[in-house]
Amino acid sequence: MKWFKESGILLLFHLPSSPNLSPIEPVWHELKKVLQALPHLPTTIQELHAAILSDHDHVEAILAAKGGHTRF
Image (cartoon, rainbow, N blue to C red; front, top):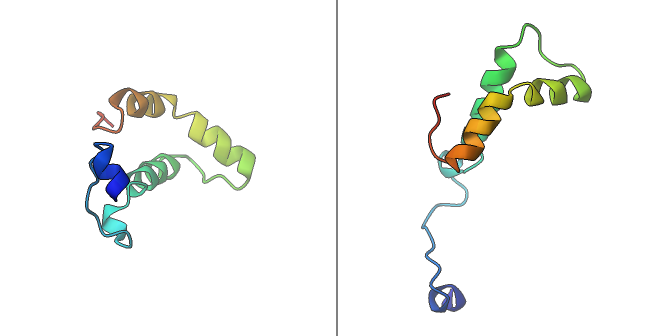
């Protein structure tokens, strides 16, 4: 903690075990939306990979927003 303070790095307080504050939760939510919109759910790793990559517009928007809100 001392090093962070001396280095000028601000830390955000959060409860590490709270699923409501987990930064990965919005990513899982978006992935579920993409998968549920498919005509059929992927049944292999290859199908899952193809389904995720086919959502290129979402990925580009998320990267451009640098973690902020997107239109999706």
